[in-house]
Length: 334
Image (cartoon, rainbow, N blue to C red; front, side, top):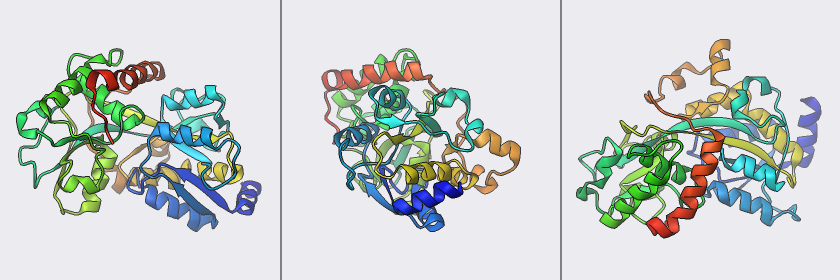
């Protein structure tokens, strides 16, 4: 670690991408890293999706400039794709053994970081009858009110919402097609808003946002009652999604990137994600070791019955949804 810290400090910078400060408490994670090591962080496209992160790596292969990301945090299916494409490099953090084998690439190219469940984030000053389940979203009363938290052709969060809706409506982890059918119906009814739902749009433009539980709960905290937000985990189609970390194969600051990974997977980093309502990947090991932040642990929502897809299932579902959305649903989410 001493040698790595010295090398990272010599580089002096780290470039991240697609890390909103209210996502898993990345705001505190970023400031905590800089405070600990004195390394400046250049933040790119904080509202980008997983596909945007891969595109940024590929677009800057020959560049060591400020637009070239060092590290990425992407949906699970994007990890193996990036490895196959040669976009990422291997690195095993010192706490590697605590990461379940099912949540990491054996060679260290990508590794699970945290997971959450799909939920309904609702502005109750606009929507007084809060939806409890996926089929409720078809209520004509929600016309022009339901939004995805990303573009379902590139965003893992949006893809997961489509898949979860399908599971609640005749689909399964092995059949994502009903998700497209559901959103086609939602779009035809006029309930789907063709806008990416964000914290700022919750006030009026997108009063019902389909988002990971940690993002929705973070919004609730940051908005502090203006407007009032309710977060509901649907009664059916409870779907969990894991994200993964990786280092760009072309990282301008490779040592700072490795040190960033060490920080993320330390107890301090894992508890920061937990404080942001995310289930950190080392959670079980930390519970056993007694190093979990108990106050943050107590704030996690009830996600009983949530299903976590395998990598193969994610790969197939992602292909179905990203290819089928433009023609079958037809809504351009921007």
